Image (cartoon, rainbow, N blue to C red):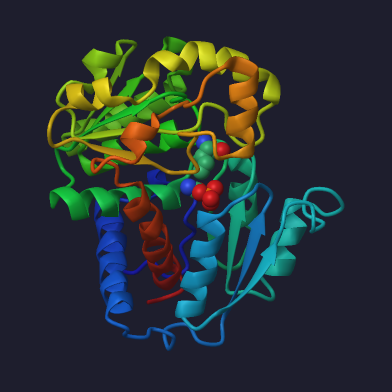
Length: 330
Ligand code: CP
Ligand code: NVA
């Protein structure tokens, strides 16, 4: 398997075998890290640019730690601190950065921006989250599911909430690619784009996976292996949508009744950050305004033994390290 020189923009661009290869490499790098075996010879002397047009804890830290572990230097471009998009086009930025760096990470808005960056970059471009997709998150989730269950094919995964945004879209693509059974459990308004559904159904037909939609929270979570969700309002969306999201998505909150319905062996996953208590600025403001103390997941489920969220967060770093290592030539 040779992924040298490839961009990592969305999982639709990768075969099942390539995804498994990245997961195997991530598992190997994780094992080395746990055993104190250094890998800083792998890409010593190289540098990566990390463009963040939206906030981040996990993705930024994962790219920085992974790059440092591989022997590389990093330059972090925070939201609003570079010329990108304002005084300088994406195409010009790509040509400048790829003359100085061996790889470029981009987190921001439309998928078309990261695709444009990749088109004009001479070096690999990695998608650290766009409105449409969050592919590095998917590798972390797959690694976590595989570590827990021991396999991926045939796993039943239900996503609850806003299924038409980056996380919902990405889970649907991922399940189709890996031969897993995806259910989006939400009201029809929040179902993914029809063209993407059709593309994923065609992929699922070749892998043994399936794509299902239901508005019934109990039907959608009955006897599934993985229940996952995401925030009801994503970065970049206006505050005005909170009221409607709370009203429309509250029936899809992941709570004890949902996890009990999923069954004894089901696990809970969330890309994080999560609104499961009042210990966040936004969570406290929402509580004051709308009188709710938990949102997409209850604190009880979040803190339960079924919740793999922190293992999932750690796996961001190992999987991102695999993406960097493989696309720059392992
Ligand atoms: N899950 C995730 O992408 O987290 P950050 O926004 O903290 O990077
Ligand atoms: N849907 C969320 C994911 C955060 C990791 C957002 O885009 O804000």
